[in-house]
Length: 143
Image 1: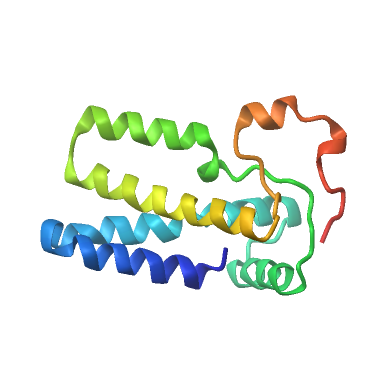
Image 2: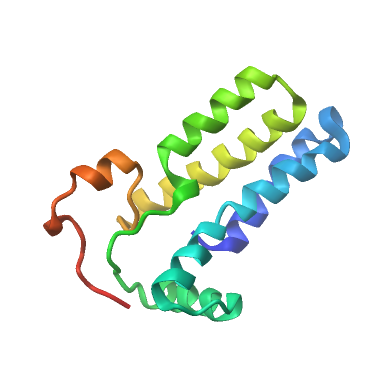
């Protein structure tokens, strides 16, 4: 999903929750958008290019051209990461962790919706899924 859509929906949720949590909603907003930094890590490692602008352009070009790529592991998008954050949230019971979790859940829900709607399967959703996938499970088209 495009970053702009994450910004829009995260802003709407932050506005809705602002009366209850005041400026703490910035945690929701920041983490709800910055979770995509794992895309940058994947680009930087695979392309050996640490220029964030080039990474952004690469992903935007892929999105524009609907280029299918090999399935990737985006660490902050894995179900195991969700579970870890939710366990920490339940254990700590703080407004900050609740808002961080809300931002992550919104972000990932939007990504799943986008993947289903557009029939995108460009990332693994779980480490277990990656480990049990055979070599034929990727699209084998590299951009």
